[in-house]
Image 1 (cartoon, rainbow, N blue to C red):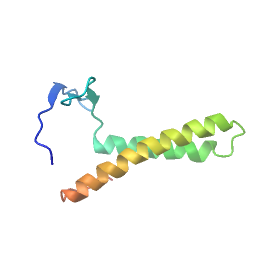
Image 2 (cartoon, rainbow, N blue to C red):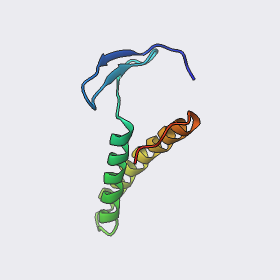
Image 3 (cartoon, rainbow, N blue to C red):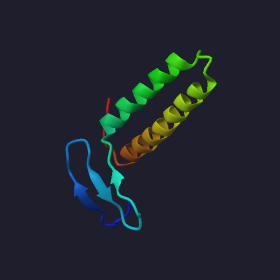
Image 4 (cartoon, rainbow, N blue to C red):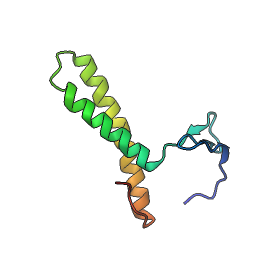
Length: 88
């Protein structure tokens, strides 16, 4: 676990903005339960467009799905490592 200090620029509900050390741009924090919902939506989109003749649309949907699910996997691994409950 890192002991670096992050700068909290905004704590708006579900839209926190945080500046990590050594990063040019701040990050937009997505709460774990919101990340899970975004992954579920991306998975639903992929399942609905997978039969589409628009292969570019299918590829873009799959890329979105992979990006979001990749973040969810890391998030869940970190929570497990720290003995924390996962969002439903």
